[in-house]
Length: 524
Length: 85
Image (tube, rainbow over all chains, first blue to last red; front, side, top):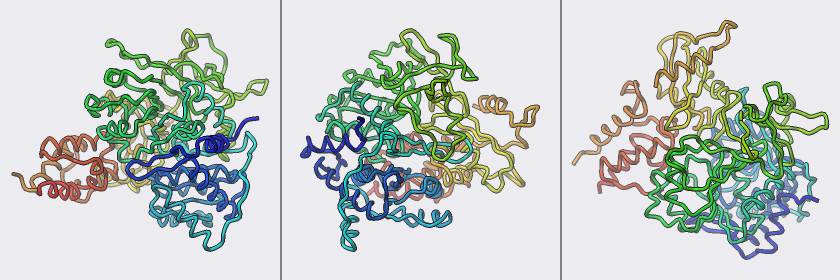
């Protein structure tokens, strides 16, 4: 009988109640016992607010001890948590929270007014629990105290959900211009967490970095693997997370043993982190995922930090990590090609198929498909998209189509070759070029919009928006960037905007993306 | 010793050259949002910080590498003026 995701935490809290569960550097920390009690209080309050098992509860709070407690409390109530990006435009977050009809929302004061304005346009507001200035758990405790003064919440039992009950919904970029919700069940989450236990052998003495925001699926490993083992989670605040010099110091100060992030921050750490002046001896494991790690920077990093084990982890949000590869330093000087994405994780199965989903010869290029206990339930209320994302075998096995083209080599090691469709990774985030187009189309003077991505040596990928203007002179670059930044997350703002008389078309009168890609490469 | 105004003109020229190729100088004003307006991503912000540190001999603390201190030319002017004291 599979445990639930929060069951792992509750069991660890009983064994390790005095150990530190979460640290907010420079601000404070919380023990397992206190986190257990605080999340119980939230469980009870959510129940009093009308949240039932099977509901969704939104979290719109900056990364903090409060938001970790919120995750635990929501799970204990039998609901699925839906974390939204605190740095994304309120309209996008409102869309997400309305889309999955959250039964309640935990929201930080600084976001509340703008969010309510957006939500009111979409329908009745969900019940909200407001917290002031999230940080060391005082904010959440204060909010619960205030609610209890009005009407104390009855104590309820911690939920024992079915394995296929949802644990969380993470929204990712959607090709029709709207984000889509990836539904992960308790079984999905726990099978992944258990694989991490097997692969990385964490213990209560480990100290995990929490670099990824909670709406990003890297956080599942950071939080839930740590909580299962009674380890400490060191929350990396957003501004420190992008500052390599101070990051190296933070790793030393907090004796971080396990680091997990997208490669981009590790590249910055290697180049600008002044690693020679820092100790780094606490690190035993460096995990990276989300995009290709430029070999040049991986070489520098492993040369400066030779002691940890390094793992390249691969997997879309729909499966979490599904393949892994250990990079053993030193990285040879003559190597230029990225490392493989590796072999399939033990709780999953993989196969490579052709364009129609058919079996292909071993060693040929094809699309990677994944089956097993870690594979998502589907996309929230998008049955057609969900169906299109899977190949179902005659025996009923559901294979998730990753859309990634790979080649299988000896020993079941997969190497990544490229995307099947129009999605790219930018700073670790998945970006559907269509979603950027959708945002830019809203500009009153944009007549046609087409966004392409081309490889870039330094940045990995370069996003160019081609537009034709409705009338008059085209808006300035500054104006277009600002327009985009107000409607899309910052990682979706194009690098360049190119205005044309008209966009080139194919013989069937569709936008000629191939030509635009060629044009964007010429204009380097 | 350059005045704050001169320093800001130098910073403005750097930002136009490095991050806004082909853009007329007057579209970048004292109030133009640089980070929140999508002009400077995290790598560009670091390049800006390195430029400020090397060009003007100032040192930025961790919390100053943030949109609160660097989002507009006016913010940068304020930061550089404070560092002069």
